[in-house]
Image (cartoon, rainbow, N blue to C red; front, side):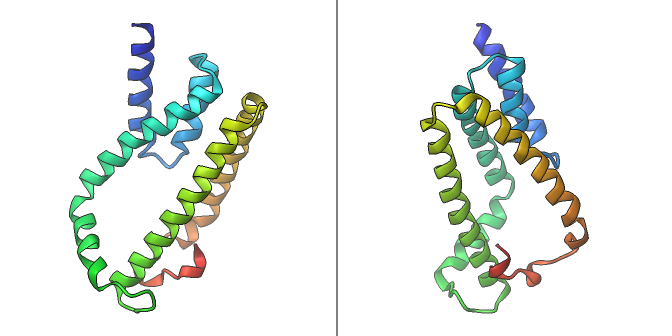
Amino acid sequence: MEEGWKLIVLGILQGVLEWLPVSSQGHLVLVMTYLLGIDSADALGLSVYLHSGTLFAAAIYFRRDLLALFRTLRSYRLRRSEQESRLTSFLLFTTVLTGIIGYLIYRLAEATSLLGEFFMAGTGIALVSTGLIQKLAKESAKRSVDDLKLKEC
């Protein structure tokens, strides 16, 4: 039962952190490793598992938008200038690119023998980098879908 309460706390923490402008994964890994004593390799896997719950919650919340997006896939063309095609291009490109990079980082973290300290240092660097990017991005926050360009990915 001791493990059960940890999972409940982590699920609640993930649910709260995901909607805040902070890195929920970075904070979850730090909490799991330093406060709950979970091994860093297990913390990484558990963090990915917790994010799948967020994926399902977001899919349910944005279901109408997702259905509309899937309906436009039949008429999708890469170079079309319509708003739906530009948004679809942006989402497809960033999803595939993020998936590839995330998978490679996950496999690297699993395979390395220096996982513990290296992973925690990387998490800290990522948290600081995310904060700086968010700080610098405030001025461009007033953009719309019409302003998306594929080269900005």
